[in-house]
Length: 419
Ligand SMILES: Cc1cc2nc3c(=O)[nH]c(=O)nc-3n(C[C@H](O)[C@H](O)[C@H](O)COP(=O)(O)OP(=O)(O)OC[C@H]3O[C@@H](n4cnc5c(N)ncnc54)[C@H](O)[C@@H]3O)c2cc1C
Image 1 (cartoon, helix red, strand yellow):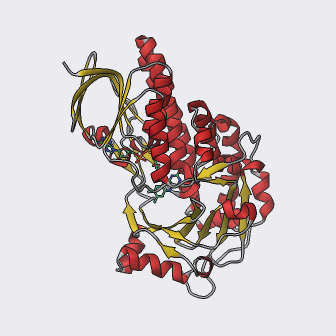
Image 2 (image 1 turned 90 degrees about the vertical axis):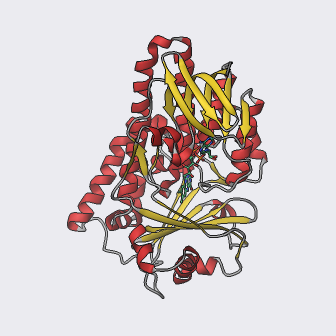
Image 3 (image 1 turned 135 degrees about the vertical axis):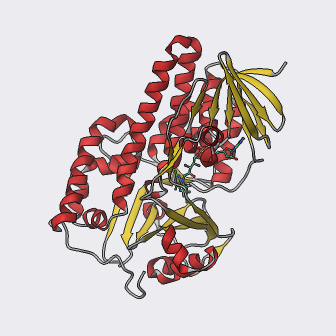
């Protein structure tokens, strides 16, 4: 007889560990199978305040506060031409509840969350891959590299190469978001004093942008996102392209004069997609398995934690009252879909020239549209109030595109060397 669990979770990243912790705290018998042995390198280091409420609920916030993390107060976006910048602080957010978030080194952070799941009562197995799942009227049989298990429900939190997504061919890419990312960790990148040194810095070029994220007292994550086509045309290795783009950017290279790279240069393409469905008879997708939009605006871990939390709450209700399953699953799909839609529109807009022009000039517009700030803060609770304000922002961007009536045109080219 296969060992039985109420819920089996494939994947021990933020989505899986959030769901596992919350279900175990409600008394359910939960197993998390994680393919890797933690700690392992992972990208996705800049978090949003919207997750802090969930961390409190999970009882893990105090542990995060004691770890080697950077308390993030907001971000600073600068134009590659160096003429404009816009600093946003979460404390200025519309009806701010959580004025800070975190920058984290994911190797440490994911391990901390997963250890917390184990302490909360989950059976956590690292180095165990979920290889298959077969569904029937009563539940699911989960095959792993360590034997087979029975459960009433499966949460697939296995990330961008989702097991269920591949099995049911659910993955849909966004044709307008064919991007390519290059990234590495550095030590001794210059930091500004005070709060400014805690901000995520984004340098917005014409067809690319650079992030600089302080992730520990010593380490900074530096990454570049550009069109996949542009990277191909460069005919360079990831490391060569990474170095060349940074050198061409006076702001980044200036800040990195003393910097020492401490990881290899990682490269990733085809990361933007969404699953056609997020639930099935006995399964639920959470986190990247449900979809990932783009690194800009740091929505990845926010949506992973949010969907992990909502999946746990929903399954808790369904396990108590199985008759509610269909309605609960539909509500989950709608809720996560709405958050993804909001970010998708905002991300799509970011990659237009007119977005940058409105965003950077004049600064007052940024204040007139506090929803932009709220989206950056990842405040799911404010969605309805956020939506119409964000709509005004998109109207401004539209007017800028058609008539350039909000701001003067910008080059977005670095001064010394063209991007
Ligand atoms: C270039 C880039 C930059 C990014 N920057 C940011 C950022 O600044 N901020 C942000 O919030 N997000 C960012 N993200 C997104 C972020 O990385 C993800 O959204 C986040 O990690 C999703 O968490 P998750 O738990 O869903 O998946 P993951 O973190 O991917 O965890 C999934 C886990 O499942 C395990 N697994 C996979 N298959 C199996 C299996 N078959 N059986 C068992 N275990 C399995 C994996 O080993 C992994 O540990 C970025 C993404 C990219 C591509």
